[in-house]
Image (cartoon, rainbow, N blue to C red; front, top):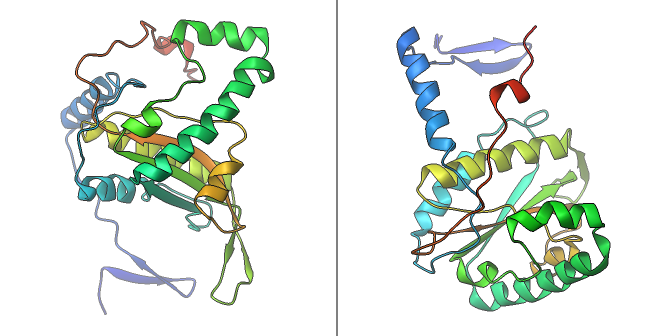
Length: 228
C-alpha cells in the first residue's frame, strides 16, 4: 500500500508534506511577507501595457487555492480583455456609480470617501488590460441541472478574493476592489447562469508611469489584535 495515501472514513487522504523551517526562517519569512504586502495599495491609474495570459492564469490558480465550505469552491473568475465588453462595463458601472454618489450614499459616506479622491468616473475599467469579475455560486448545478448545496459562500469567495489580491501584488501588478452597486448588470453583460451572482470586480495591470495614492495609514497592531 502507498504510505502517502490513507483511507479515512472511506475516503482517500494524501500525506501533507509541509515544508520545514527553523524558527529564524519562520520569523524572517513572516516579516518579509508583511513588508512586501504593506507596500500594496489600491491603484486607480493603470498602464495599458499588455500582460501575458499565463500571468492571469497563475494568479487565478493561486486564488483557487483558498479554503471553501466543504471544498465546494463556489467561485467563478470571469476574465475580460475585450475592449468592447470593457467599454460596456464602464458605461454601466458609471451609471450605477453616478446614482450612488448623487443620492444613494449618505453625507457621512461621501465625507469618508473624499480623502480618497474617488468619484463616479472609472476610466480604469477600459484602460487596464484585464478585468477580473469574481462571481459567487450561490448553489451548484450538476450535469443534469439539479441544484447542489454550497456552504459559507460569501466567506469562501471572500477568502479567494483575498488570495487573488495578494497574488496580483506578488506578481508586480496592481488592482483595486471595485463594487458598483448594484452589480446585476455584470450578470447580464457576461451572460452568467442563474446560480452566479457578481461579488467583486478587479481591474488588473501595471501602474501608470507616475501616479500618486492617498497618504493614508493602516491601523497599528494594537488597534487590530487582542491577545488572550
